[in-house]
Image (spheres, one colour):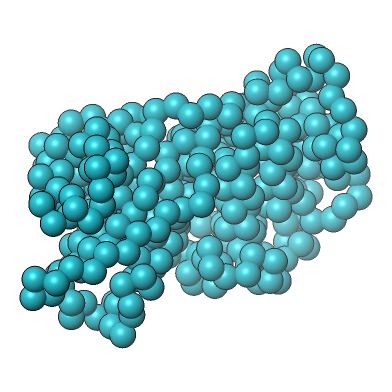
Amino acid sequence: MRQFFTTIKFLELEPFDEEFIELIPGIRIFESKKIAEKILTEENVQIIGIIETQYVKDCEAILYYEFEDYEDAFKDSTNLEILENILQWIDDLLKNLWLLKDNAVTCDTAFLIHESEGIYEASSLRLLYQFNTSRGKLENIKLNKKEIIEFAKYHDIVEGYFHTKNSGSLNFMLSKNFSRISRGLLFVKQAREARNLAYKVSNYCSALETVFSTDSAELSHKLSERIAYFLKDDFNKLDTFKLIKKAYNIRSKLTHGDTLDIKQIDVLDDISYEIDIIIRFCFNKILKDETLLLTFDSSNNVIDSYFENLLFG
């Protein structure tokens, strides 16, 4: 039998009656108190050590996966290869959790413990990043049962779509047919890893540019205008236009090695926070509308035609 488990940082779970909630096939999220005893056997405590044992006891949430040696998905794979695969699944979960809300949720060290006839083999790995919020903070978010279940369903739809487009996280994001939305999400992921707010804003701009831009002519103006009209039913057009322009001014200064004045520095976290909201709304609007999704994952000509009709139709 094999046990996979990892603690989750910066996540509080509102109590739910069920023992667990399944996020993807096999990967279940538990309140720590409901699974800690099963994980912290005498043998496992000796393997993971005192510090990791305390993390398991103190954390709010744990991801857990238990399976037998004959699991077809991992046939002919070493324990380390299995652990790498599972962590990749979790990496995608954490990437897409941003679609639900701004967060710094990340997993800690992950363990795979394999027991066969009383002999134990253990592997451990961790994701080499720490997400932070749009303001660059490490803060907890709360999720309730309904939010978790809805997110699990949404994640399955999103990743299923990316799979059909050969646009998963392990595919080369700069290939011609890679989904614009998936590429944009990967730029958002880089933004969430950056603690420097200027780098964060720069990556947010790249995410928007990936989805909404079709050429480099008058880029910041055209992009700001397109996004302002795309969100006109939900956000003030002028406010959106000005926000994107401010973000691009920061990106330009960063890219060219320039400095920000004190007024720009003072509002940098607000710009990052506000543009994060804009991007999340854009991406969810597209992902939840089949017509929009088809449009934005089409050719530049199709996207240009869409915005010509939107702006002047």
